[in-house]
Image 1 (cartoon, rainbow, N blue to C red):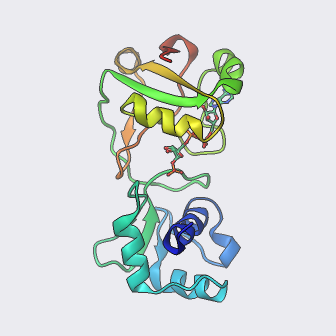
Image 2 (cartoon, rainbow, N blue to C red; image 1 turned 90 degrees about the vertical axis):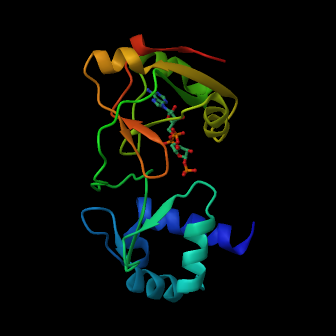
Length: 180
Ligand code: HQG
């Protein structure tokens, strides 16, 4: 794995799940102070400076991190397990979205619906290809087709993260079918 990719993974861990692991805190919107973050990462053996951080943010394959306007603060755009307010605006999704998961989770998903599990939201993809990639992270993949049009009609809310991931609170069983 390349150095930047390794640092990126570490950054995701800190900004989404465990800021306390390097002794920093996030504000209510999920932002870390950049100066504090860089110092703390270096103390914990991760060599990083502003130039490297700017490069990681700009080149990250999924645009996972974003700075505030003057680049004094940084946060992850989605994927948190800790509770932060991402200031997401409600948005009408396309009529159909997809969710990639592992076959071994299907039985439970068909019983309980799609739940957010350890994250703040259920993550949905706008195309099958992306859903396949997401699902493959967990094992033999299965893609669910989500009838978001019906969910919207029934009053469910959707949000779009800064990096293009659709988010919602849950997807009950009557709104999905197996796509592939
Ligand atoms: C499953 C990556 C059993 C769910 C991706 C998923 C995404 C259930 C797993 C983002 C269930 C949770 C999120 C139920 C849901 N019973 N299993 N009732 N309901 N599940 O990693 O959606 O690369 O927390 O299907 O691209 O896989 O990190 O969620 O398989 O956008 O930026 O429980 O993470 O982005 O797994 O992935 P995850 P996810 P990054």
